[in-house]
Length: 385
Image 1: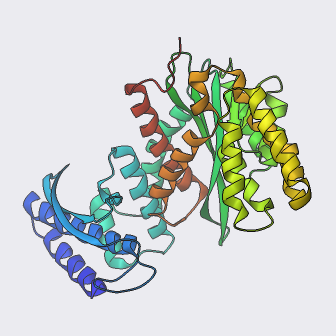
Image 2: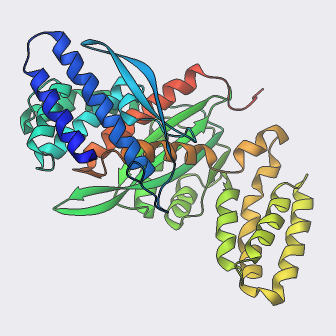
Image 3: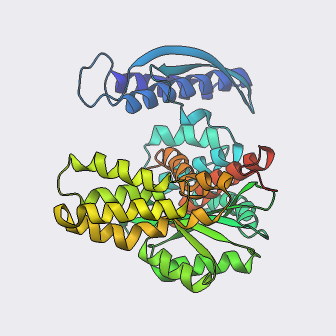
């Protein structure tokens, strides 16, 4: 039923697009947006209408009116709702740069032979140009220049820095592979957050992390006092090579996750997690080390692998105690980077498999550029003095 509705909507849109005048185009776009949002909600719910299945994520909860300003005028749309309220259609994402980048990614997929003829016809109308390889190249060159200038802009003093990476699927040489997207965030001397840079690489090997770090330094990154990250081998080696005298805070959230891999029984996870939280929430480093010592001794016999892991790793998550109390909560984890990664995932999943590395880097740059601009107009992240 949903597929038939989709085909009917596409046929109706194409008929309207062939009629002269902006009203026809406006009606066509309204139908297209409403149909796309409806299908996206169905995919989000992971169930057909009225279908009972254990895979269902949520339930439909009607619609609410929403207006959208476009180049052909205002569209009066019906925004699909869900009961839990954590669904928002990607078609209405704020920010023209990410919208253009996403359209170009879809256009490039069409060039690679992924899209159908009818979807290609609509994509051409939305993008405003005929979808051919040469025209996509010219359009993307203009957009890429803007993103390249942003990625290469000068940096300055950032006392606190976070590093992280995530993976997306990219088609390369006829094969779909996972490629890593590096991101670096920083907090300046006024307490403002910044996206310092991003890079798409083949893996998280040391050589790639080191090149990324060196590019940040070359652009003027300085005054770094503390780096917060996970303990990935490649990242750690590159960090020690490029920032040898900078304190390192191992992400406490990742430490909590890592600890669960060393428990003897599944029911032991909650107990270990609770004890680790007590270590991390201690009023001082001395008290944290005392609690950690008690944990190590407690599990020496019942869970020796856990005890050994605790002794060799958890102290790396206590560096933050040397910094002002009011900063510790936001410096002790890489949650700032994790939130960015969740936003990237939410937006890149619309594309699925990227046709090439440049397409992924383009969309990621657009999203991060918008986030960075929002941060500059927002409140301070840390109460720096």
